[in-house]
Amino acid sequence: MTDTAPAAPSADGRTPDQAAGPVPGWTAPSGLGTSAARVAARFAQALHEPPAGAPVGAQPPAAPPATAAVTAPITAPTRTVPVTQVLPGASAASITQALATAPTAPVGAVTDPAYAERPWGDGSAPPLYVPVAERVDDALTEVVEDLLVDWGRECGFRGEELDQLRAAGFGWLAVLTHTDTDDPQRLLVAARLNAAWWAADDLYADDSGMGATPAALPPRLALVMSAMDPVPPTGRFTAPLEEALRSEPVLVALRSAVDHLARHGTPAQVQRVCYSTFAMFVSWDAYAAWRHTGQYPPAWEYLAARQHDSFYTSMTVVDVVGGYELPANLYYDPRVRQAAFRAGTAAVIVNDLMSVAKDAADEVQVCNLVLQVAADRRCSLAEATGVAVDLHNRLVRDFEADHRELAALPSPELHRFLRGLRAWMGGGFEWHNTNPRYRS
Image (cartoon, rainbow, N blue to C red):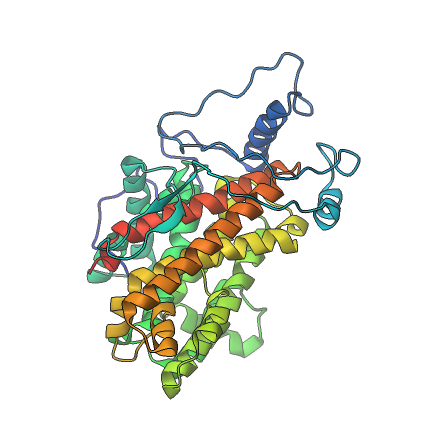
């Protein structure tokens, strides 16, 4: 896993599983309705009309504290939806109808200050076009990392494993990528899930040096699914299952992470995360088969699998961490899902680019877009890297165009979710580009 050595208790003395409010001194949204109301108020103010239910003469929301996320301006939409189709405050159904019927205007070249070309790695490869990281907050990161290590200890990780957990920086990843809250307990939703996913990936799927074996992966993932989404009791067969789920820290961590998710999200959001994870496991099984047989796929087939094993899975909690819910009919609308998949795939190509040396060095070579392109084209890693960079940059620009188009819809939750996807890409790049795991 990527885990850490015993750390001092958190500053306020609470255990990670306590559902108390944020650590004193942190200003954070509280509850699904509160955050959504704040966003609705800002959205209504932008339309020059008071939010529904607001008293006459109500003052606009106060500016966020200095430690809050830096907010880049929303780019003006490139199309409009006629007011006869959708009005502010319209139902999710009418918004979904507008998605299906509104015309799409061609998108020209737009310079958005929320994006930039960034050098990466040793600087020798072409730059990556990425959103700008919106927040770097070392103090908040330390709080979340302390709580995460305490949780890792509760899950059964010990000694060097806890050292690795701390060094991996999953609390730091949560702070960088979920910039619309500074509540440590909500940030722990993302930190715990990512730590548990990465542990399963390293220990079960990818790293031969840590015990990952392709043939053992499918049955291990079957147990992981039972840990995340508990099955109904089956009489005498339940006891051995429960014993198995308590026997490995990875399984304990995944169950605990989903329990914490359930304390902050709705049942629909919990199942969204579970089933996205299970789709990801299908891709993991494909990689295991390729590694086991030594018959590696062409780049196009690998990329098809990679789109379901991307940071889209991590992005499924954007609204949970933010303290609101994007309705299912919007979340799963094809245009919104396309934007989310583009964001997740672009972000995971960053991971492949940063992981080439590590993946190629494994005794059983790990699947990686750069390595598959190099094998397909019989070209150098430098040339294959350029191909992967170009694909990444096109995906980000396509997401940028999706975002502009969807900004025409009068859904504060959708606007906030799309901004959250953008923030995840920017923070994810920052995390990979400065994380020792990817700098060797």
